[in-house]
Structure formats: structure tokens, C-alpha cells
Image (cartoon, rainbow, N blue to C red; front, side):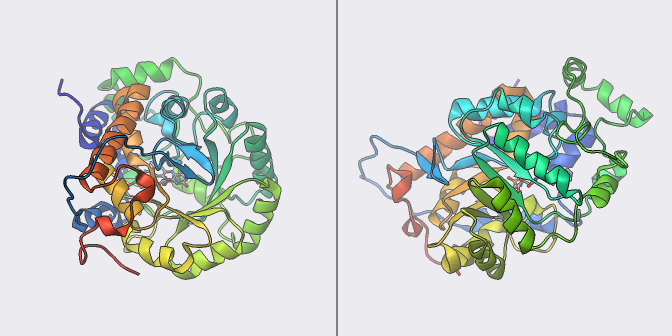
Amino acid sequence: MTVITNIEDLRILAQKRVPRMFYDYADSGSWTESTYRANNDDFQKIKLRQRVAVNMENRSTETTMVGQKVAMPVAIAPTGLTGMQHADGEILAAKAARKFGVPFTLSTMSICSIEDVAKHAGEGFWFQLYVMKDRGFIERLIDRAKAANCSALVLTLDLQILGQRHKDLKNGLSAPPKLTIANLINIATKPRWALGMLGTPRRQFGNIVGHVTGVADMSSLSSWTAQQFDPALNWGDVEWIKKRWGGKLILKGIQDVEDAKLAVRSGADALIVSNHGGRQLDGAQSSIEALPAVVDAVGGQIEIHMDGGIRSGQDVLKARALGAQAVYIGRPFLYGLGAMGEAGVTKCLEILHKELDLTMAFCGHTKIETVDKSILLPGTFPTA
Ligand SMILES: Cc1cc2nc3c(=O)[nH]c(=O)nc-3n(C[C@H](O)[C@H](O)[C@H](O)COP(=O)(O)O)c2cc1C
Ligand SMILES: O=C(O)C(=O)c1ccccc1
């Protein structure tokens, strides 16, 4: 087997090992996927300035996110159905993140439950909330996250209705998978995945099934989302969620400066510049392009995070240079998980860390805390 040296290697291995309906689910963007592609392509346009004869000893990528210490400015993004990329996926990823010293964010739509993941997660165990029509259920979810010692709540604002992903509809995406002939034939070619799944009881939405009354049509993700998620969500709801939660609050899915100002007014501790990995509004600008204007408008008042298109440590450094306190990774850790379980997530974090550390040094810095826009070549990066 080839030696794994970068995130693309993990993607290729995941594609071999994960059943098509779940690999496609992870690797899709909405409609033409133009925003999904732009998220990464726009990073490639930004050029770094090489500096030499600078003492490169004693380097550190350590920093903080919402006041919590992190080994590098990278957190694991919340992703639904993670436990379908690999048996017990959320538990394995949480373990890898804890050992590495970065936060792990558990999605509302996870396969492993908050309580099961809490047994394995570290201090950086965060919970991501989707707001559903059944507000009693949302209150219970918030209370469960508190009881599980989650140290931040990530409230996602950009998915009250679901962007269309063609492959999910064609594959009939559901969890657990519908055992159609086509799916069975495909799963038969992924014995490692199948054995893992047979060996765990966790094959349904762990936070939802058995916790919410009247779970409606679970046969497809899109129909279930349309029935349960609340399209009426507004800034008034953010207020009661903040109050009910009472801890660190991070608002996810901000792209526009006006929304960033409203996020500040809501009293949140941080916001995430994000377009949901190009899975929602196709045609939106890339996150890295949207970042500078948000930093310019509200950067002094609230911590700015970003996600979308991070595929290397170089990308992490560029985001940091443009004013993001930290970034989140979605697909990169999912590829690692699908490729090699916990070891694959660890590998993913190691790859990003090494690339970040060396690139920072090539740019003439030994501490991530001192990196700023001056490491970027003028004219090659987006401005406010
Ligand atoms: C398979 C998949 C599932 C996702 N599920 C969620 C989710 O449940 N909640 C959420 O807030 N964001 C979700 N996201 C968005 C990610 O949190 C993140 O914004 C995005 O993946 C970042 O882009 P990247 O994949 O290029 O790193 C999901 C993304 C992917 C790829
Ligand atoms: O797929 C996603 O991006 C996502 O956030 C989601 C939405 C609904 C159910 C599961 C995951």
C-alpha cells in the first residue's frame, strides 16, 4: 500500500473502503458544486512570502479557541452520519482529537449519542445544535449537552432547509442504509466497513431515535429534515438558546457582514465564517474570500473562526493570516476516518500539524500567535 503523506491519500483510501452512498454523501456539494470547489480553489490563489535566515528553533502552534487551549488552531467540524463513514466514527474521532489536543464537535445528527461520545471525549468536547420545530426536544438536547460537560455549543444557522445534493437523492441516502440490491452489492465490496458495522449497536441517529416522539419519515435524510427542522428560525431563537445554554456559544454559517454584526449583537462568543462546505447555497462565495470583510467589520468584538476547503497546513496558515483565530475541518477528518478509523483521524491531524509548523517557519515565524497578513504576498489575497 502507498504511504499516506497527505490528505488526498486519505481521500482515495476512504473512497475504496466506504460504501458509495456514504462516501458520496461526505464528498458532495449542492447543485453544481461551484461553491464546494471555490472553497479550496481560492486558497490556492493566495501566495506566501518566503523568508530566510530567521531563527526557526522552538516553534509552537499552540493557541486558544473561545478561551480554551488548543494544540493548533484547528477543530473537528460537526458532521452528520459520521458513524456511517466507519463504525463508532464519532467516538473514534473524539478520541483522536482528545489525544491531539484539539476540540471535537459532535453533530446533532450523529450516529453515536452525546452520552456515548462523552465517555471518550476530552475537555474540548463541543456540541453542535440544529433547531427543530419541536422546541421541547431542543431544550432536552441542550440539557443533555450540559450534563455531558460539553464546553461550547455550536449553533448552526445555515441549514434550516437542505440544499440539494444530487448524489444523495440518486443513492437514496438513509441511516441505516436501505438494503436495496444495489446497496448490498456495493457493501459486499467493503467487508472491513461491513464487519465494523455488524460489531456495533450504533447504526441509527443516536441523539434522536428513542429521544424524540413521532420521528417521522426516516427513509430519506432530505424528507426527514424537511419535516423536522424549523424553517422559522430567527435571531430571537438565538437569544433563548443562549440563555438556556449559559456557556460558550459559537454561531456557525455566517458569510455576510450584516449577519456578522447581528451575531455580535446576539452576544455570541465566536462566529464561524462558513458556507457549510459548499453544501447549501451553491453560488455563494468561498469562505476564505468572505473572511476578510467579516474580520474587518467585527473582528475586534468577537472571535472569528472559519471553515470550508482546508486541505493542508498551508491553508490553515493562510486563514490565520487573514484574521481567523482558528479553522474547522470537515471532509479531511471524514476521509481519515473512512480510510483507517481512529488512526486515520490521527494521521489527518498529524499531516495538518506538520504542514502548518513547517510552513510557518518558511514564512519566518516560530509562533502561530505572531502570524499576520504580512506573510501573504500583496495582491494575491482577498481584502475587505
Ligand atoms: C458529510 C458532512 C456532514 C455535515 N454535517 C453537518 C452537521 O451535521 N452540522 C453542521 O453544522 N455542519 C455540518 N457539515 C458542515 C461542516 O461542519 C463544515 O462546515 C464543512 O464540512 C467545512 O468544509 P470542509 O468539509 O471543506 O472542511 C457537514 C459537512 C459534511 C461534509
Ligand atoms: O449533510 C449535512 O451537511 C448536514 O448538515 C445534515 C443535515 C441534515 C441531516 C444530517 C446532516
